[in-house]
Structures are given as structure tokens and as C-alpha cells.
Image 1: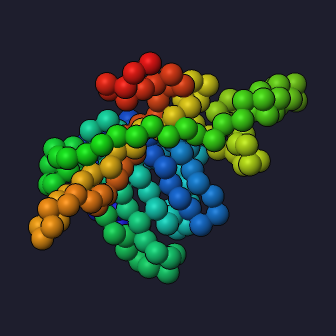
Image 2 (image 1 turned 90 degrees about the vertical axis):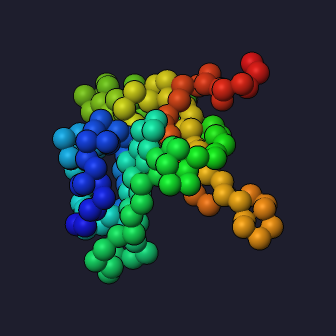
Length: 177
């Protein structure tokens, strides 16, 4: 697997969260000691199935992607606040799809059967995802970067990144309660 920029900058992303879009599922977890550790069960995902990867923390995000599994290499970039044109941005909070009732019912049933999945969350559409400490993490903070068109001067969004997960009551700086 060729994730050259991540390998070269491993120290910048130590302990960061990741989201991996695979050909058969989406996986979330932590990037620790150069290894992707799934929040589902501590395993590593199959790198051969990787279509897109985002490794992120408060300051930066590494992104690698390819259009199909037949491509050998990945397009890569690192978005770091305040560097290389990533200095003008706005933030948004997005709710994660989290069905509290179904999740709690499933956890109770799993605990009764000694088959607990503490990081599992059921969605309103019937899907399932895994995040560490999900009990309080209900939002995801997304940062969108802006550039000005040299001809018109109008600003446009040219890139975005995941900054991190936030608690239910989280608000953007300056946002009223």
C-alpha cells in the first residue's frame, strides 16, 4: 500500500482518529504506532479494499483516495490549518446518525448474551458504526477551506476536512446557547 505522505509524517498523526472507506464497509478507529486500530474490535482493516482514508486531529488531516481498487497508487494530501492556502476557513457541526433507543436495546440484548459491542451505534436507517467513547460523541466538526477566484475575487470552497468528534452539547465558537 502506498500512503507515502502518511508514512513520512506518522509522528504528526500519532493517536489521531481515522475514517476508512473500504469496498465493503466503512471503518473508524485510531492511528497508533503506525497501525490502524478499529474501534469495532481492535483489528486492522484490509488495505487492499481501501478506497479513501482520512486520518485527522485538531490541527491537520491526511487524506488518501483512489477511484477504484484497480489503481495501484493513491492521491494524497495533508491539509494543515494556516499552511499552503489552508488559512481561511469556516467550521460546521454535523450530527451523527444515532438512534439512541435502538442502540440501547441492542446493547442490553448483547450484554445478556455476553456478546457486548460497547462501541457500536445503530443508525436510524438500520446501519451500524463503531466509535470509541461514542456515548457522548454525537457530532462531527467539519472545516471547509476557502480561496478567492483570481479573476472575480469571489470565494469558493476548495477543500474540507474532518477536525474531530464533539459532544452532544458542543457549539461553534461564538455561537449562542
